[in-house]
Image 1 (cartoon, helix red, strand yellow):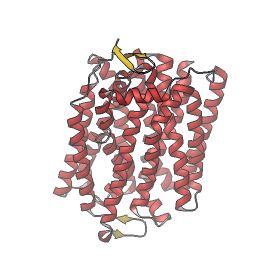
Image 2 (cartoon, rainbow, N blue to C red):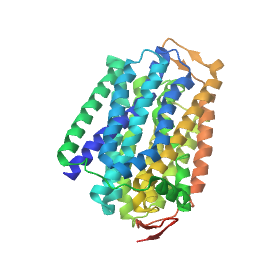
Image 3 (tube, rainbow, N blue to C red):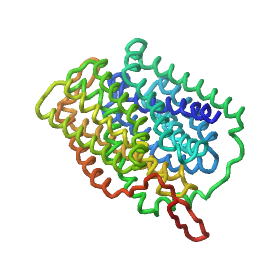
Image 4 (cartoon, rainbow, N blue to C red):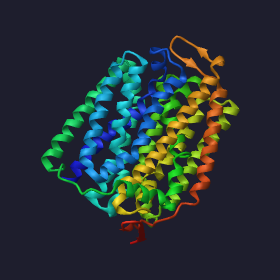
Amino acid sequence: MELLILISMIALYFFSFFQRVAVPGMIFDELQHAFAASASAITGLAAIYLYLYGVMQPVAGVLSDRWGAARVVLLGGLLLSVGAIAFPLAPSLPWLYAARVLVGLGASLIYIAVVKAIDALFGADHFVVLLGAMMFLGYAGGLVGTFPFERLVSAIGWRAGLLSAGIACAMALLSAWALFHRTGQFAPHPRGDALRAIATVLRNRNSWPNLFLGIGNFAVYFLVQATIGKKFLCDYAGLSSSAAASFTFAMMFTTMSLALTGGVISRLIGNRRKPLVIAAIGCVFGSVALMLLFLRLGVGGGWFLPCYILLACSSMGSAAASALMKELNPPEAVATSVGLLNGSTYLAVALVSNAAGLIMDRFQDRTIRTAAAVIYPKEAYECIFLLCLALSAAALIVACFIRETHGRIRISTWSNSDWSNREL
């Protein structure tokens, strides 16, 4: 029964990740054409989702620790479903942004609540492996949001495609509610001290390197996967929409596979987390460096497929990074600590997405406008990838200062005025 409860939560995480990848990455040109919008306005749709997601992660952690996972998952699923249905019905850009706010708020509550549920239902021994499995199944939503969604949009249009996804999300929400009600998941949950939990994590210096790593790791990966990756291939390499979407499909499939195996690899190497985190950032740095080299050499689009796959290999460190954050902080703050980590990561993603849109707009006078798209010059993408290279290099340096846990958890002793912890 515990496994069925977890799967019902992951189903909602599936749709949250679909929304994250599909919009605006797969329909960048369609949205720009439909609403006569600038590049920064479209990348802003990704950014507003990510700003909300990042800001809400600590809140999601506190709510999950205080209310329990089931209530938070259902609240997030409700907001996500309403926003997902409203988005394709939006008549104007402001309405589009309003719907995206609801999607971002809803999605922001789900991941941390599922992490909390894994810890509560299955314990520490299985945490990193089950977290990797959860990421694999959730990332499947991102996989559907690449090439399959692009083909659906080609067949029935972006509005009908997104409306179908929104209705399916609402059905998953109703199924989860029925299961939680039948299994007693709404029972009273012990309340913790939210402010003390946040202070505990932020005052722990071992947490600080982890909070920085998302800037040069996931932010760069996500920018390519869900915001500009498909458009870059169409603009620079002249790939068709379906061919470019197949690249991000391969990227997402790699992400899923390595997210699943990352936890297992960590177990096989003695529950070590740090090597996987460093290797993940190394993949980001190597991928961006190769893309810059290929841009300078003027090579064709097919050469960028290995770069996209290498970038996706960074997902091998996802479960390890969350496990590190959990293990370096007291068990009372499981969801809060992972929420702060996820929050810093997604704020970084939002900032990088905004920066990419602004860079593209700086080259507005050198664009080529067609009936269906605005094509940006190679130099715009070179500037974006140079920024990504600098961020990943900084993250690689910071990663060397991460403290290894070897899977050992922290035991916390709370007092009225202070806190301390020791390893178990």
